[in-house]
Length: 348
Image (cartoon, rainbow, N blue to C red; front, side):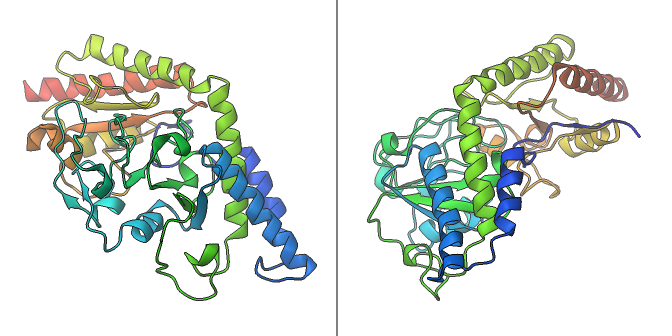
């Protein structure tokens, strides 16, 4: 069987061994965190340890970390019914709740006129473009940035942020809403009053334990400069492709980007065709956000940047991680360029 290379880290990341170990240990805990007996207190201790780990990793000491089923639920919890303003580049989970009124320029940067009534992502999942978050912003989706670039919630002066565990080596199905202490959040899931009365339901102890361990390990990687090496590999990929494919552009590369993300656009060559061709060649990539890929349509993110319909439908996303080797990147570049030449010859 042909060995495959996973180059879709922005969709989801491999589970960290630290997270796996924490989850296996949590599975042996039989107590309910809401119970007052010894078994319940042990379960509660697992949840609170992870809460502290996530808060510390986010620089959110003194804030409230509310565990949810993921960033999508966190978005619904904090954005529902508020009518905040945002831009077309936001993730679908955020777009569902906002008014798309904020403009985006050709670099992928969004201008916010009234931060207190607006939401703005920290980094884009398709292009990696990092935003300059304004002071006093209501909500920010930091899901893609968490663990890849340094920041601290306590420095942002933002009311709330959204995060998800599986984007930084934790398990799927667990995330969090982080809010300034005392912020009024109305529960959408009502019942037993768990998570400080903001999100009812027995806590997902196993997922929470994995989230906490992954967040702690991710901060260690960041401190050790791991993502600087990732950025070097990303730049190597883009240079290799740019040198050989004359009409290829990299949307968002005029702005500061996440170290692992490359959006590659070759107009007239459908992104979904490229994804299938690369999949057959043994490389997992995407044609955009994992929540929207699979739907045959042009990238609304690239359309917001000013690209036309055809161009916006001709892009792929390669997102790598600390485990990605230069050999894998070189192999992908060779495979992609081989298909690019075939497409060019057919179009000639």
